[in-house]
Image (cartoon, rainbow, N blue to C red):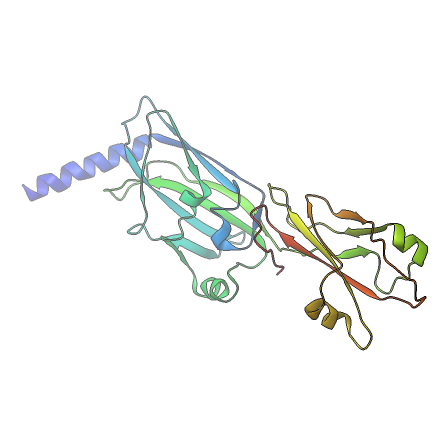
Length: 263
């Protein structure tokens, strides 16, 4: 009886392998953030569409088998199928998110890449490929063909202050009326609008600009949504005729007001 059971299981496995009843469409965003933990939360970095064939055997549940490699074929991460989550599949079309494809509870990263994630939370900037297929939950067989897509892990770059430039001298009359601040955008640009926090501090006598940033109250503290320019109308007083020194800075926050940092 035991031999018959094994034979029947083998026949079933062969039928599923030949039929491969599921078809995959994998559509990644070309640019990912390098922070691995954010792949499933920072917008639709990847979608997986699964279509069930009406002619093939009906598949009720699957496990997503994901492999990440560099473009030269070096393995970065593989899915531990024993820890992979069982996912239901509908009779028509099923959509899986990046959080499903990049299941951080099941992905096992190779040593050097795991060390990098442990220290920085990120993978090195560069081109990668993601390889996805759907497997049976009970038999060691594939229920779909593999789909491979290349994606790029972009390094995050904080804004660079453009104007007023470092050590710029502004006429007092003009500065009292309006000062235009401009900076470069945060890279990579997310799907949701970024929040930029513009602050201006006066640098008092015997202070360095860094000391002013750390200890003084800001003369300007303004949040700007989605744009890289702000016009300030300071109405400053220069009655004593002395020169004034100021320092300004820009911080970047995501739409949920989480501070963003550079690589």
